[in-house]
Length: 138
Length: 138
DNA sequence: GTAACTGCAAAATATTTGCATCCTT
DNA sequence: AAGGATGCAAATATTTTGCAGTTAC
Image (tube, rainbow over all chains, first blue to last red; front, side):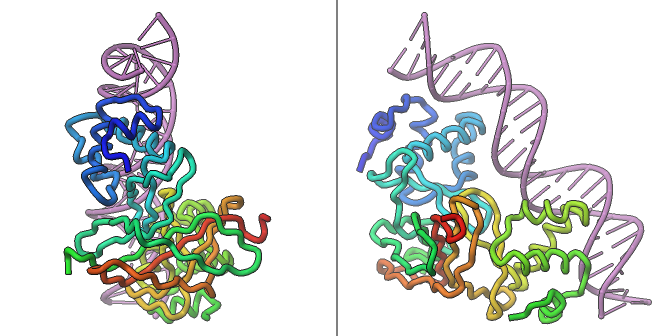
């Protein structure tokens, strides 16, 4: 797994700009998902709100981060594993959202199980989110 | 399963108002999920935008509808099955989102499988969304 | 009649767009 | 130098809140 912001950006043919490296470093440090609002908060004195939107969009398009499905109308992103390619995500792992600390954790080793669908449905991508209490909050 | 708006509202001790019945009837007819925007569109000439927000919130609180996790920053709701109670949802079925027609379908008969989590995690609720092509669009 | 619901106005938030300027390669 | 990225201003869109008037029971 790429561990420096520079490596990740280069691999995706993106120019090395300050804001991209800063936002990317937040993800590398986070070891979990970040909400759009968190990112804005942590970069508030660095760059424009608009830059945050555009940077995150670029990252998603390039398969650097992926969106996590939520029911609370928030937008959560997490780093993709290396086998994500531009426009083609392979993040078939389970996400865990802690009801206590509200952190979202990528359970990279827990694969989304395959379910049998009724006749006629052709599945392509399956997402799974488990909510409960994480180890730190117990 | 309750099939009239009146029944559903009465069972949940909610007063029978025009807007509640109208919005509820949209769900009964839909046989799938509705986006907030859809509902607004279909009621645009009936009542206020604010009433839509408040009505949907009331329905969620009473377990009449539930939110469906999405990655696209939209808000989708679907009718709950009968065993949902106020503040305590039991919608452990899989949702299917069609990439072609963009409809969301509740697969009531497909139960979300149980996954084994790493040590320390206590799961409570599991949600699963499958994306692909539905039978109608194939 | 009373409590709850709705409409309206307005505030607060969130997101998108255009364009001039600056930075990376 | 050229293309892309950013900042700023402003337009849009979304969601929330307060309050007065209306409706359901």
